[in-house]
Structure formats: structure tokens, C-alpha cells
Length: 154
Image 1 (spheres, rainbow, N blue to C red):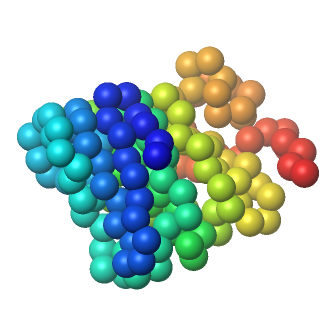
Image 2 (cartoon, rainbow, N blue to C red):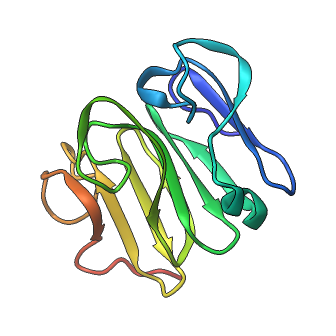
């Protein structure tokens, strides 16, 4: 049961459902509700996503992501630094959005996200003030960026 910053999420079986509760700053609960939401709230996933099911759900600072059983990464919530893998949104948050396919595993960080693909590429996106994206810069990236030069993956 992963937690973000002032919110938590959990998943159920098939049909897969993701439930989040707590502070809903930047739509971190994946539902268009006023903050806070003390009771578990179902994340607004598509019927197809719920049928496919999820293997893993994790919260970052004000965003969360889930890996579908078909290796698709879906993220929602705050995207002020591109941590959802798309152009930054400074006001408000985004609903559940497909970020990348072919994902084996992922980790949601403070304001960044990293994903390991099924072909052993390590990609990161979002904030990068301390070089947390591993690309040799401190520049934020709103799209999945290959960790450089090459991170050895066992």
C-alpha cells in the first residue's frame, strides 16, 4: 500500500480498482474532488484499464502511478515538473494518463518518476535539480529520458 505526500493508494483485484485517500492537491487522488478526501476514493480509470489489472501502484510527492498488467504505465496528479511524462501543468493536476508502454517496473519519486522497460532501458522524467534523472544534467525533462550513459541492469 504505497503512500505519497499526504495521501495513500491501494489496489484491489479484478476488475482492478485503485483507491486513494488523503490530500487531493493537484488531483493526486485521481478523482476530481475538493481536498481533502478522508475516505477512499476510486481513481477514475477507464473500463479497459480496470479489466487489464494492475501489478503495482506507487505515490510520489503529489502524483501517483500504476503499472498495468500489460506493461503500460499510467500516472495522475501533479505535473508541475513533468513527472507524469508530459508537458508541465502548473495549475491543477492531470487525470490518469498513459505515460509509457513496455514497462517492467517503476518508481515514483518526489517530483520525478523512473521506469525500467522490458528491454532493460532505464528512463526518468520530471524534476532534476540534484541530477535525480541520471542524464548527467540538472535540467528537468517532461518526457521519458534515457538514463546516461547506460545504467547496467542485471
